[in-house]
Length: 164
Image (cartoon, rainbow, N blue to C red; front, side, top):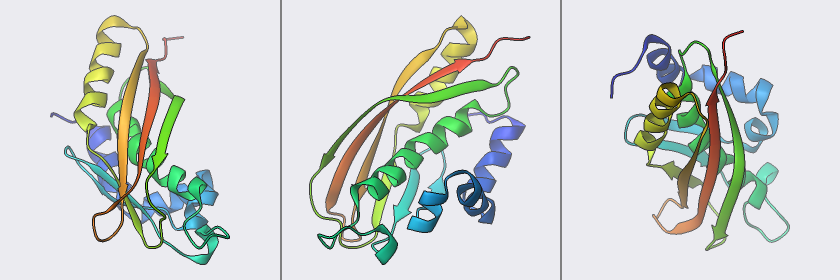
């Protein structure tokens, strides 16, 4: 996978303090819930959400919305990464979401998206055809012991904007 200059820069920033600044200003609910990016590379994107007071529900587990935020970020970050550095730029939007909650989240949950190559391929197709693409990105949330907490599938619509 050959990255352009902007994609290389974005990948480095995604796991630095700059991502915390981004979530603070653009997704404050994720920031205050403790959602953090652990990894972004060609193999996977890992985002965590801790089990802490701000992210809990009355049933002593992580609130489903906090789990959903972390899962979405684990698929949205690779989508942002794949669309960086192109002129004209890309628009991206979640058009569908499916989830299955398997077990109560009572510790840090690690959401991993592994189909990174699929979004890069979809971007290439968009550029070639000048048509939008819908791509399903999957994220699996596991606890520290590797037990599955939840499955998520987000369908992202991507489209390269037209020159004006």
